Amino acid sequence: MSTQFKVMNPATGELVKKVNYNTKEEIKQALENGHCAFKKWSKLNAHTRSKLLKGWSQIIQENKEEIAEVMTIENGKPLKESLGEVTYATSYIDWYAEEAIRIYGRTIPASTETKRIVVTKQPIGLVAAITPWNFPAAMMTRKAAPALAAGCAFIVKPAEETPLTTMKLIELAHEVGIPKDAIQCVNGKGPEVGALFTDSEYVRKITFTGSTPVGKSLIRNSADTVKHVTMELGGHAPLIVAEDADLDFAVTQTILSKFRNAGQTCVCANRVIVHESIVGVFSEKLTEAVNRLKVGNGMDEETDIGPIIHEKGFLKIVSQVKDAIEKGAEVLLGNKYNADKEQGYFFVHPTVLKNVDTTMNIMQEETFGPIVPITTFKELDEAVDIANSTPYGLAAYFFTNDYKVGTYLHDHLDFGIIGWNDGAPSGAHVPFGGMKESGLGREGGSEGIEPYLETKYLSIGHYDQ
Ligand code: NAP
Image (tube, rainbow, N blue to C red; front, side, top):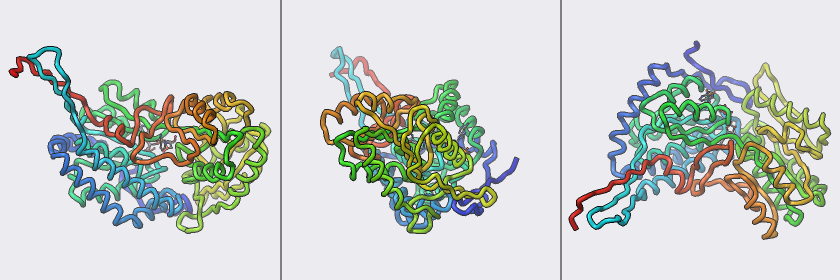
């Protein structure tokens, strides 16, 4: 087996860097080191851990431009989005630096006079993370920051397409004094590293962001050692536009939700469900606005839509669009590609499809590309049925200024994140996560640190008052 892998620029197909795979032995050693580091890190007082996290956030901000460039070169997303992601990534570190000093226990009134009952929180142990390529900075920090804040040691395996951003962030963590073994990065093939993580007696928690099938296998493999798991998995977000919606605003927000990272995010609006009375006007306005988006290399500041990460992702998009057209969808814009397999780049021009229905693959499978399929509804419960008819339950959006319509949709949509007149509901201060096959647990907000803590209950008998 090769001892190195190539990180390629998806906008040009050029080699960015060769990175060493860690050997099995090195990864096992890293896990043991992480376990030992946990013993020291967890004993540090929370204020010191908090200060170190603040230092980490600050040094990342100081190196923001360099990190963003690395991200654009390995991931392809426009530089302005990479800069936004660096800030988004540090917002998790800032938030959990504050949470570190607010991990409270409680006392419980005892049922007899001779007892005292105390509940404390303890860090869970060594946490092993596996992250995807679509947010190489933020998907790591939103796991590492609460883990370190809680007193856990942390080890991450980034995606093979985008290890450089993660490696840089971890180098900076060491630079500000977070111990080398308290936060580590290892590189290797997903299934092999996954097995080393799940088999390890040192690892007490697996936290994963990525596809649902891989998430399921990690849950299964964690069962033997009964590890805690947090799973941020796939999504297939519906976006409902009600009859009364402010259409110009809905169009702007649809674009915001749909086209980030060329449509390659788990919360991208993937199924646009519009009331039949306004579908004509909405589609026209949307197509006009989407037509202004510029496709190109993310390093060009004019670019709104970068490349698709790899050929596999590109072929899935092309086949979903082809299938939709064969089954009767009308192309309002796009269905244009600039791809060269030999050179190694794959661009998809933003595409708007009308007359889409639920028999088409694009409505059934997660879409990871800049495609907007539009379907219609007449009655609100029909929109809810379409929206809920997926195994996924991550994010859903709707646009209405009618309180009754909004509360009905909120109450009936089976999704963990709801944007009501809001196409960008994410943030470090809110609980992000999915229902159904979109995942287990939440990241962000006060909920995001709990999965890194054990609850320990102490009953003191013969308590002398
Ligand atoms: P993926 O194929 O599941 O890969 C994600 C990570 O898992 C990579 O580091 C990969 O390593 C590793 N991996 C692959 N096979 C593995 C295995 N058998 N055991 C352990 N690890 C394994 O997903 P992706 O295509 O990179 O990412 C896109 C997916 O992530 C989408 O489904 C998207 O919706 C989801 N996502 C979810 C969220 C959320 O918060 N819910 C956020 C972002 C993305 P290699 O690179 O070595 O293969």
